[in-house]
Length: 120
Image 1 (tube, one colour):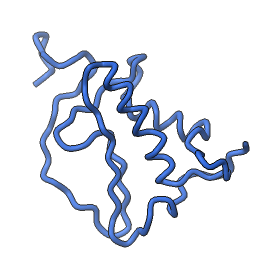
Image 2 (spheres, rainbow, N blue to C red):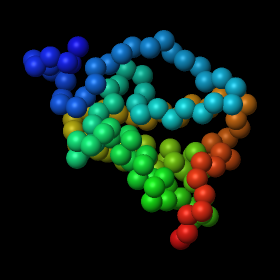
Image 3 (spheres, rainbow, N blue to C red):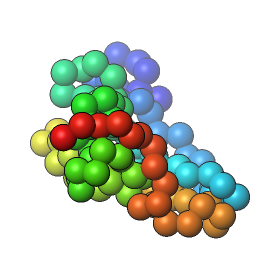
Image 4 (spheres, helix red, strand yellow):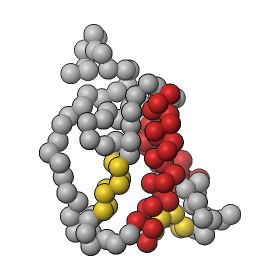
């Protein structure tokens, strides 16, 4: 289970719980920490998850405002967070690929604004 003292999982890693494949419905956007059968791991400093670490940095500092327009779209957020999570997971000898899913009524991720007011 990963909870015992003899676990093969790296410290801070939660055990994998398989879920049925879900379809995003309606006006729902899902940016998941990992995809498929991957395990989401801890941040390098041990403070929370790797995905959460980069997500809060992206939004909190405005770093994900890739085009510098003062807004962060869902596409920019995913484009900024995903490669950093993948890179840091590789450094820890594991795979973690964040996954973006959009419901059919949402349109394009570059049109969904999740943050604004970032000054450059």
